[in-house]
Image (cartoon, rainbow, N blue to C red; front, side):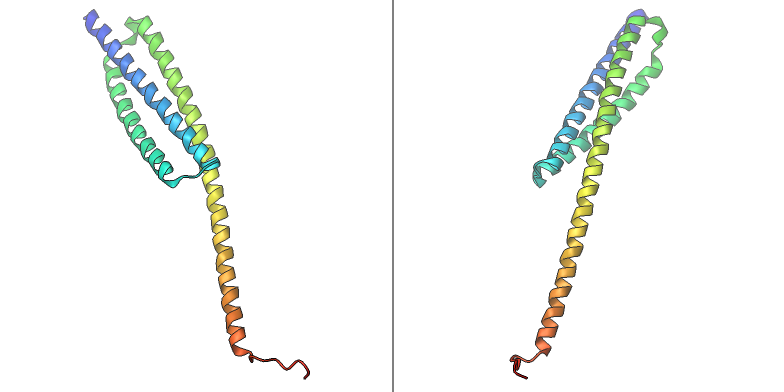
Length: 150
């Protein structure tokens, strides 16, 4: 019975370590995404990063569900050492996740600002097209030669 609990806690610890690794990879992807948005935009690279982030989020979600199901079966009151190490891992995960969420909020804000700029530029282009079309219409109605002398 004691060895089962010890192996369960070890297994839970392995799951948490994997979760921490996934969260750190997610943070790295988020940092790369922010760098791409602020400095050098490469659409192919950005697509790859966004796809990789999606896969990591899926892994984190399934890993969290697995962790929750294991945690229900373990009584942490029997093992303070396992409990303290687990809590340390959970704190690290929370810290990395909070950093990721903060960066995501910054990325969203930057992207929204870029979208706003793009929309304004597209509106200006549309206005210029209308202006040019109006000029073409007026030019076609005017005589080719203007009598300057009256």
